[in-house]
Image (cartoon, rainbow, N blue to C red; front, side, top):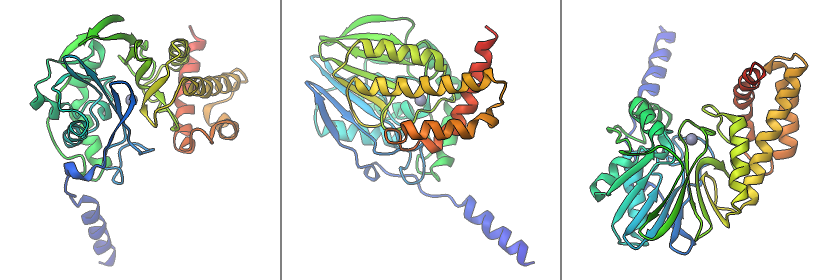
Length: 317
Ligand SMILES: [Zn+2]
């Protein structure tokens, strides 16, 4: 009987529905990082959870002669509304373009809030748009449960205008090189390079002061793409997660992924399984990178298993 009561109490506690967060639950502030460019940086270090109420990713705003360009829209429609409020604190110009760097839910589920702003275009890569349409409802469910309901329930709005290959384009007089990462962090990532401003909007191809999530990655391509981005020598890098920094941050993430890849490849060559090599690799990685990537402990275990499969596949090429 007692066991039954305890079980019931546990069930009730875990099924308790918390209220969704409101716009004013997010302390967002747009900080100017270059001429006509602002970043709204999430202080969160982890995935969406009850403490960050789902707001764990960054947004960039670029002012042009025709209106604003917004790059990434957060993990929920309410977070999208909070972003608009933070944008309105620095500019009252129309929001003309909404861009999604990739299809992971924390970078586009806020799109629905921007529909009311009547943007001329909502842009992502063709591959990312396909992923959004396929996985949108799952992302809403996943974040709802990861945040204890904070991100709420809503119908996700995928980007509409597809870019299919590298191109140069002017957005209201601001030149943009749209770069393709080669599916490095996730299938269909795009990066915006603003050469006149020396600003790079990277989405999740860049993590700063946070260890990268590799569950959807092609790590070897990612390492090569980081070289490509470093060669641009951007003065300002706005990452998908973490604070704004300069080009040295790109070299640092390159070093992290490359070292991890090399250690796993060496273990693989010795015939070790991932779980056999993991303890030594964790120790070596932490010694070298824990200072710059404080949440390394949360990510390394998964990254070793994920990259092990990629090293193994590369061996059969
Ligand atoms: Zn991502």
